[in-house]
Image (cartoon, helix red, strand yellow):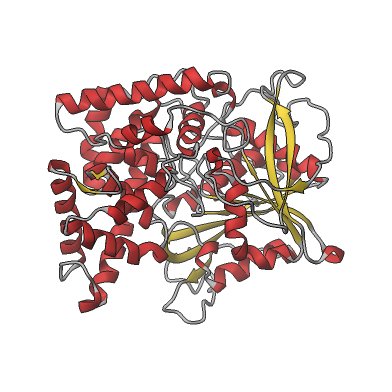
Length: 533
């Protein structure tokens, strides 16, 4: 998601894309609320040079000499704290100013299912100012990457899985869709049954407290992005007295059920597509796409979807660009304004019968590399989401809700509506309808909402502040595009976050930062803001 918040879901191509973004969550609550489950204090970590990422983490090169890795054993089941353990893989880059070092700053970049061991080194330049006084730390959460990964289908099976029609329109297509979900679920159970009951967010939050102990920190200093905000909220609920300086960016709405969250995402991605289209129109003849208004460009996207549904075009290798893969690729490009030029080019090329670029964007979202190997982000995403959410939708229930999704988004609605069936028949019951993130007694938590965020709509930040409780959440609004705010590079947002994390000074509640074309990035107070946010 992120690439900040890794994004994937393992149910139907776009489902894999959108519901994962970070907006779904995971993990059963099966222990005390004030301890790490009664386990002994975590032992100090033994740091060593990092190996290259595994295929489950997404592959690639070893991160280099600035980075160290370690493994922490944690209980598989916190209800049996002295029983079987699983390894958590961690990574860090040490603070440059050891004399003025504050402690560790632990990152979760989202998903759920994203590997911190691969994401943090790749994103580290965005957090250079924080590394002066913090050890930058991340980890593969349980079920992810190198940390007892959930495994479902193999690479060849996943190619077929993601090629399925994710918005079935006939009884035959509906049967194939449901059968593919069942086949995927059975593979997860066959290959990872032992892990599935224990990969949820509450257990991941308990792992966070074990990480805090092992790092030798009295308090957890934390930077959560997308799904990482939900994990952080659950941590604050379980361990409010252990919260240090914490930032939540690209905030998951903790009040929404999975259906409400999916509907919100449909609206969010449609909004982002409209903003992309308007930007293209504003550039006049420089825009590659046909249309003199944003609505005309959006109509062109819908027309392309219909064409691909009737007849896919050349993709990468022997794979074709289907309607589902194209929609997946469009969603991927809407996560960051930096990807808008690729989206424009990809749509233009697809209109001419060449689907390679949109297919590459879709592959990136699904965790597929150029060698055809998949990371386990899709499997972990589904397992964590389904360990969390109690919602299990039947075919009839799903079809009944499709009109609402189509009304919310003519481009993404069908895909997100059908994706509600991701957890249907899952062998593990979900833990909650919505997570409890109330955190009375916690230190202040900075909560950042982005008005143009497609995956975690802006309203979620306000809801998180309300649910954290009085005196805990401090809201900052970023008027910009893309998924998240700090990673946009906006100087106003970065200044506010850095001031809090480095100096302990929170911004005034309701502060607003406006993206370019405002050249100053100057924050305004709630009284100055026209919205009063």
